[in-house]
Image: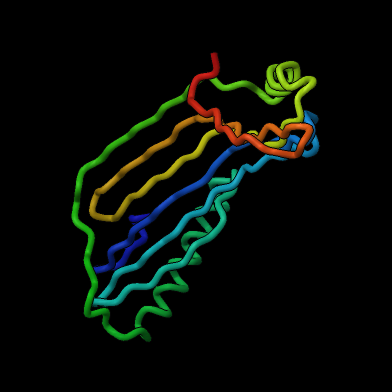
Length: 177
């Protein structure tokens, strides 16, 4: 992507997404379950004291993503020359590279139900379970590269008494034990 830049163009890229499972619980029963597998890319073109940004949805098809990114870059080139100069522009600097990847021990989708439902029996529990991986990345054409991804889970719940009073709690972590 950075090889496609013209003289004096600077490109910043950010990447963010998640791969998560969500379960809605009511009266200690599974009421709804869903999955999110989503990622977005944001491109920011800097040229001649002007900036232009666009984003697009990332797919699992590398060739399609590259074609989309190059098309977005072309559109930004057409737009940026029409924009006024940005008097507050801060051009990126090379700030090195980092990588922080934390793959943890999470329950898979079948294990979640087997682990949660037995301890909820005979209790009026309302809540939301979320579990999965989130990831973020940033890079620029000057050589900056940062990547972060982590796994985690959270159970955000309320216990309901027969008198309809609630006690709220949260249980979260990265390794299920």
